Image (cartoon, rainbow, N blue to C red; front, side, top):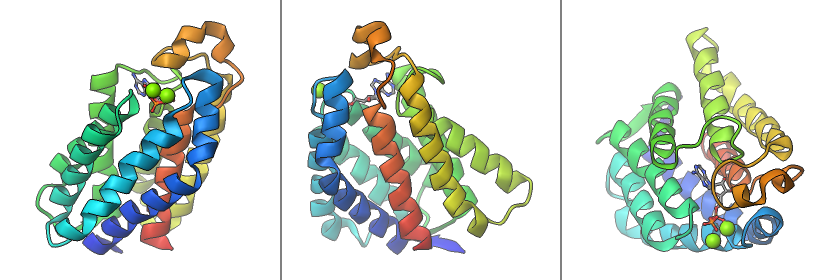
Length: 210
Ligand code: ADP
Ligand code: MG
Ligand code: MG
């Protein structure tokens, strides 16, 4: 199955809906180990993204994703704005001017986006950040694709892996971002940014596989 531009647009629209629906949930998670604004930040950012979509639907996938990243960069603020902005801008660069992608090409492009997040935020695996969802999910999906598993079988697996990896952040001690100021007291709480990444991955699955 090819991923068309319409799937990508639908993904971004679903992100806007899910961040609106989960604004309080994400903000409550951030209240426990941060400054209680993560839901507000994500909802504000993707609301802007959705508002701008009608003006850019004629553009190619790379350009739509780049616009998304620029919008997040300029409207989200905090730690997550520049990091999610980087994710989309670097993913866009890997996609280039294409109008459609295979699932594998999308996974590779997202990996390049997440590598950008890592080089910007310096988070390592286990630091209790959004990277604790993206890195294991993309690595594992890539490995399954390399073994020859068909993409159609991996859409659900992508969400299941993201769910398991979000739960794994509960026991981690934060080493990056605001939550790291709490030291050991950050243990026992689910990371807000890892949770918003799960929601983004769920929206992606819904957009490409229903
Ligand atoms: P802020 O902490 O500035 O208020 P948000 O609340 O919007 O920003 O986002 C917090 C989330 O950002 C954290 O839960 C974490 O997942 C993520 N985060 C923070 N610092 C980093 C980093 N250096 N690398 C990756 N993700 C990070
Ligand atoms: Mg915050
Ligand atoms: Mg903040």
